[in-house]
Length: 156
Image: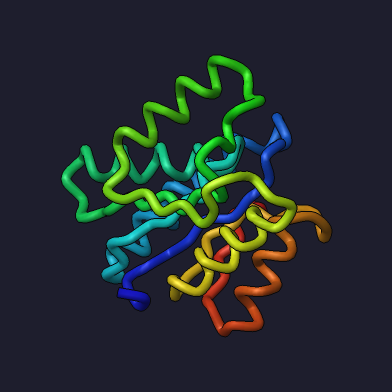
């Protein structure tokens, strides 16, 4: 399964002037991976890039592609402080998931990092949107590089 799995990692806040080309490239890269036999796509379910990537996988599946959406979530209440419209989108995406894996029951200072490591450890590819060399996305991509995972950065 690992050879057929790609995880997503990206920033929560995305640059307004770069979002359309990033989405186009992300869509193309998801399709390329499907053409190479990747069928499992893992999203961490965070705001921003993760939700966009999950939405694109659902769209591919609806178009008849063999694509499974797996959520690896840091805890059961990650959306607790999100705006209502984001919570509704999140719940809709979760309802479309093929599988949901919770890394922790409750929030803790390390649950996000545990989620990120879990996603990388399950994957052969990391499709990311990395434009800053700090934060969770940077740490996740760095971990994926150490593990020998193929990195595809759609921010470039």
